[in-house]
Length: 624
Image (cartoon, rainbow, N blue to C red; front, side, top):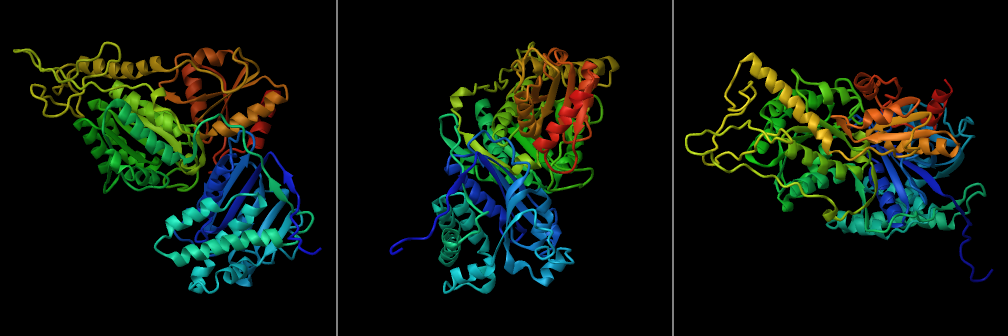
């Protein structure tokens, strides 16, 4: 028909979708996923992401060891996980297909760069036969596109080398997926101009590739079984939102906590995956008075943070399990000296160096008990990327109010995952200003550095150099008042019991426990979780509630000391299950503390729980 444009297929409206971009670690999959996340957030969808990095620093190109992936679930409803099954997989080479194929639901769409399926690349990926030719991909819908050639044509004449041109193909793929899900491209164009402002040819090339991929989707006559999708906006509470990763929220929360305490913030760290990104985030906050220091090793990092606390700043350090093990002796020093300190443990798979880029929750015992002597401290955990903000403020409140180190548990998933975050009103968070002791003792009397507040049992915090308040603190046991070194057995008994009683009193400041889901009066099964299991547990329990099952979900922020009303809550339920990504550490802690038959539901594969697997295991447990 004269004047008619390209045929636009009708879009199939869905409540949610799961997309994964996968390719070699040099293919820019994390950038691609991040840009798609930004466009999706601007479209008004709720979302959750799962960046999946290779552990090798630079695996051979085209091998399964070097595959990097980024998964996102987005929808018109509340989204708590990155999704169980992938509905659209973009695989940039055979290795990416091989590693991720099992995660794609049957009937899902697989988009391949056919130019990458050379004999050499197939061999590198471990394929003896091209999977496109042996029928092994028949359960899925397959869309093969010569992306590399399409990208070369899109950027021709823009002055790029062939290698630079090929680096633009991730934006060609992104443009196509933007068209598939009706996403706007302007935010990505703005990012390109900011990111490559000094290389206008790269801005032009990547934009050309992005537009070409989108145009290909608009004009291609796709098979009838391949449709475009429409995902309506989510019904979110009114407010100002922005996309946030766990590390970003954590860094802002630490700064906010320091400000609520009226203190400066000093971060001392040493690079280790997946905690390193926190140093990067905090370093960008220099204009807010944040001091960052990269030490030569883990021990120096925590000792510098303790020194910052001694000087009157909020000292913070961060690591992962192996690095926290190295910090342990100094952590005991902070407990003995009774100085505020925040230690962020971004957990990863272990033991030893384990799985550096995979997620796990196996450091709970290390956090609660992993020190020499009776050395209690506070342990709290974040449940989601956005929750890292509030948990960091809570860590600052506990550390400064009770003069104690606090271990804040996140994990590899939370550090890198992102979600929409409703920007809070900081007036909604109570201040907890630090009152440094400045009053010199009366003539003839001496300052007692371990004299304590009668309510919190916290000792006084004195800035060094305050006239008349010179004193001694350290790691050797000291007198219960004067701080002088003491080996008296009765004094050690008193100090040990006092330190434990001080930590126990922190629980009195917690709000009453409330279930995430389920009847408050109790029922057949209570599922207890902590940390990043919040999303899959919540969705699984919600599904079980809709099926008529009396199941509840309780998620703990405060791991130690445990909430004072936890025992009463547990007793209301016929059975208690604890879902966690370790061998059953919280379950053991609850058994020991409350003598409750807590059944562990565990996973230690380096990947988060899937909702379906958790729902199946919990349903089976109810039938036992």
